[in-house]
Length: 221
Image 1 (cartoon, one colour):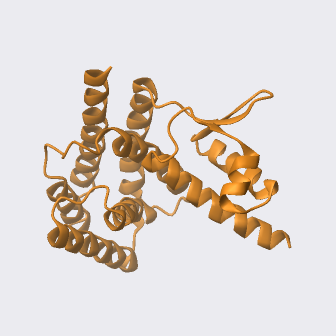
Image 2 (tube, rainbow, N blue to C red):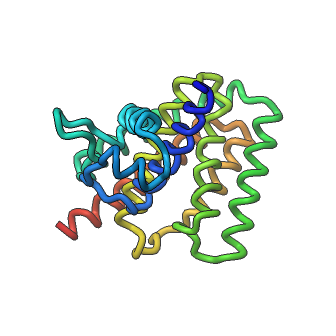
């Protein structure tokens, strides 16, 4: 029974996280346990567990006597996420390049190939579900060879936090840069085991995305 409840909570966490990332559930929306239970057809226990997990990831906050709500989407919050991501992902990638084996390289190449095929098939594809899933997998694969589970998990949370802002604020604005080319350059440097170049490219890649979103948010405020 406990395993079943855990599985339901895990599934619900994924679905709620995706709803927050895509803007289906807007920033600062109140999250009512009873309403979510009815919407997803589950009891209150897995709803509460899912919300607590999303709290730990920084997507949801608890309010005294008032339940839960989605965190705000502010420039200050994005600046913090961008700075942390630009520090942590290159740190993890440097260790991955040092420690990652052939299996890690092969997985990275395979994921990058899938990402490239989607882009070649569908053209401008950010916000296409298949591209978003593969893009996330690509970034997490880059750092997965570092052999530091806590760091990998933190990078995963930061990536999702960053993507939330990108998907909320840049959906109607095609990138003014060649993101696919940036991905390719990172992969080339990784395969050459050139840690300095790979880490700098990844850092710049993350910073440019964060700065583009910040610029749009300032224009819109």
